[in-house]
Image (cartoon, rainbow, N blue to C red; front, side):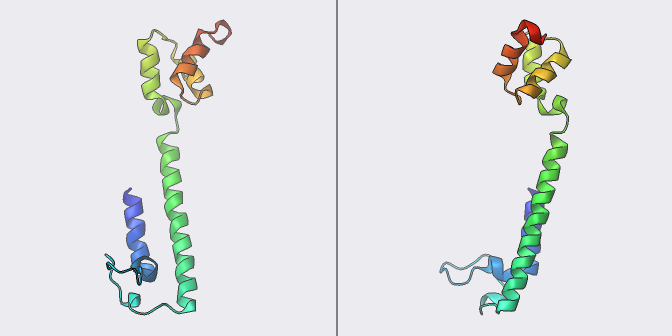
Length: 119
């Protein structure tokens, strides 16, 4: 979330005409000198490019943070692993395997663990 806020601040600095809004009544929270007159075509194209680059950076940061946060199945399925253990399924590797195959679906993992060929 902090990355998004930083990205919005950077966007306001580098391309204020994009966030400035222009003529929608009610005013804009982001004030900028370029809001009073429409940007020239060259400025608009440059702003669009900057906006695209900024969005790509923001989405890149967001995807990297979700990849690192959910990398290991032990972390990703911590709650489900605890629930399985409370239900009496004590083989942690089998539990992880069942949760991985079922994408974390606890009910499907239990069904899978109860099948004789899966234990």
